[in-house]
Image (cartoon, rainbow, N blue to C red; front, side):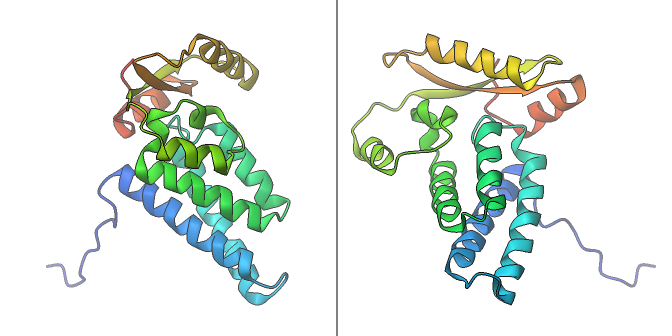
Length: 188
């Protein structure tokens, strides 16, 4: 006979967990940017942000947006204590993720730093929504080789393309299977 109430996991799918992490990161970085440097409140937010980044590192490797480069850029801003810039970048990234606006603009998939004016112009334009998908590469290659492949894809993209696509790299079969389970955007 079970006397204790059994708790279930608070998330039923990775998408829900992912969006909650990004929203929490957005809220924490916004609060941190308003805190006095070195205060107890700032230290609490810094610890919370570090924990959220660690959670996201384990999830974002299965998706094309935001890219590994973007995640590394955000982490560097955090470590350099550029909290206001970090809060703005994370708010923008979260907006793209929640609204799926990255799907219709391939520039969002590869940019390290986004230009707010360009983002607003694109969001307000009457651009045709393109079909979006992600391509999975399974190969034990280094970061430089991945970067080279991404550059080749960038040269192939045309504004008149009917599709927008992101690229996900995995280095082994097990991670590739997890990617297929987590990421419904994988088509190839």
